[in-house]
Image 1 (cartoon, rainbow, N blue to C red):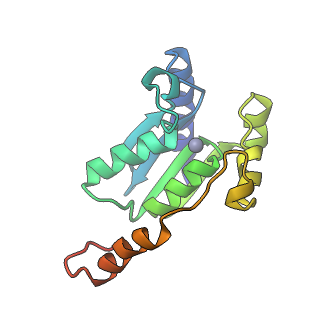
Image 2: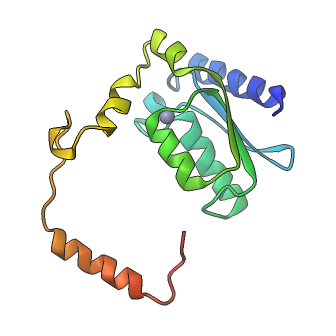
Length: 155
Ligand SMILES: [Zn+2]
């Protein structure tokens, strides 16, 4: 863990906020002791609700590495990742995540992820945004093809 990378993530958080790109969140991705990608929140400037600092940085890092995984990379982010970014981080499979501010600190600034954490434990039908299943058998047929597909790239 190197605090200079957290310092850089915090700098990016402030930069993005000052540019009115989105909320005050920044992130850097480090491999072999060097930053390979940086990102800051761009939700409002890009009209993209998924453009959190971590997601922006993960996309850039994967592009840089020409890979869909962040093997042997560390993520340094200015704030504890939200549930969406935790999901993205698990898919990207970095080595470690270091964060500065906590989710409680973010909540005090008006970014309350608590609700989403709670929703994850609610059955899909009962969620605030209802999630209903239909056409399951049709969809499973594609999974069956995937299972048998010989030239698939596993991830
Ligand atoms: Zn996030």
